[in-house]
Length: 364
Length: 174
Image 1 (cartoon, each protein chain N blue to C red):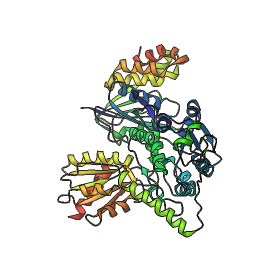
Image 2: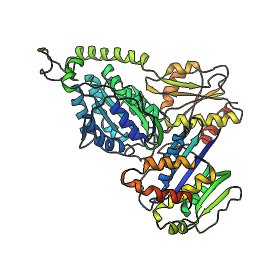
Image 3: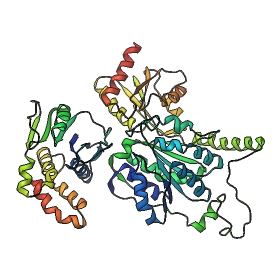
Image 4: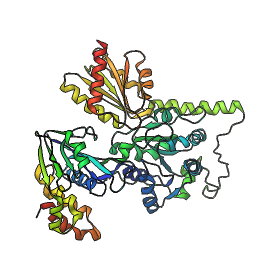
C-alpha cells in the first residue's frame, strides 16, 4: 500500500524516502541546495526511533557514518558537491572496509566552493572518486522526484546487499522543485539487538550473538601486500558483478534516429523536450538516459540505429565529463559532440535542439 | 491535450511562490501532471522571487520553461523580464497598483489587476496574492475554482483554517 500522490519538495521527498527505505541514522552538515534534507531528518527521523546528528563538518559526518555503518546501522548521509568532496577520503575507507552507506549528492556548480545553482560537474567525482585506491561506488541519477524517491527507498537495502556505499546523484533543480509523488510503504527495520544476527559481519559487540565468541573485524589497513592484493581482487569480483547487475538506463526513439542525445538527471528532461522540437522540424532525435552512471550503461549504445544515426550529442551541466564514458561506449562507432552549460547555468530545450541541428549540419 | 506553462514573479513576500504551489497542488488533485520550480539563491524579503509551473495532461518533460502561456507579474522588474516571454496569444496578469506602465505587447491578453484597491476593499493586504490567483484561475481555466477551494482546505489547517473565508472572498473577487 503506497500513499496517494502528495506534492512535495524534492529534498523533503528524498529524506522521507530514505526513512521509509529503512535508514535510521543520519549524519550531516547543512549546505545549499540540500539543506532541507538535514532539516527534515532532524524533525522526522527521531519519530521513527532514528538518530539525527548535525556533525561539525562533512569530514565528521562521513566518519560518523563509517563508525555507525561498521556497527551494523543503516546510515544515510547527504550533502552537495563541495561537501561530498570533503567526504571522499571516507568513501574510500568505507569501500575498502565494505561498510554499507546510502549517500545523496544534490549537486551544484563548481569547482571549489563554486555556486549554489544546479550542476552536473560532479560526474567525475562520483564515478571516478576523489578517494585513494582501487574502489567503486554505484551511482544512480534520477530525473524526477518520483525516480529519486524510488532509488533512495531501495538504496539502504542495496547498500547492505552489496556492502558498499551507494550514491544517488540528484542536481539542485530536482532538490528544489516540487512534483506530485507517490511514497512507498515503510520497510521493516531491525531493532538494534537483531542486527548481530542479520548482519553477520557487523561489529555489534558480543551481547546479542548468543555465545558466538568470534571476533568481527571491519578495517581498511592491510600491511602485507599479498593480503591487500587479495582483498582488492575480492572487491573487484564484487564490482565486476555490479557492472552486470546494477546497470540501469532508459532509451527512447532510437530506431531511425538522425541524432541521439545522451543525458542524465534534469538535463535528460530538457533533451526530451528538445526531441519534440526537433521532431516538429523534421529531425528524428532519440535519447539514451543513463540512470546508473557507474556502472555506465554501455549496452544502451548497442541499441543505436547505426544505419540512420549520424551523431551522438552528450548534454551536460559541465564542460563535458560524461562524454568520456559516452565515447568509450561508442568505441569509435559514431562521433560524440557536447551540448552544455556550466557554473549553474542551464540550457533551454531550443538551445539543445539547435546544437543538435548544428552538429548534423556540420557533418554534411 | 493541453499544457500550460506559467511564470509567477514579484518581490519576496508578495506570495508568488504560494500562488504557483497552489496551482500545482490543484492540478495534482485534478489528476494532472504538474511541476513547480522556484528560483532559489540568496533570496530575501524584498528581493526578487519567481517560480515556473507546468500543468499538463501528459508527463511534464521539462520543468524549466523559456516561454509561457501565462505570466503573472507583481512588480515592474518582473513585468520587464517576463512580458517578452509570453507566447503570442498568451496571458499577462499584472499588478497595476505598483506597475506604472502599460504592457507593450499587442499580441497577448493583458489583464490589469488593481491589487491595492481590491485588498483595501477586503481590509487585508496580505491576501493580494489570492486576489491575483483568483483572476488567473477564473480568467484562464488552468484549474477549476472548486479545486482551489479543496487546496485551501489542505493548506489552511489548524489555526489557519479561520482564514479560509477571507481567502475565498479574495479569490472570488467578491
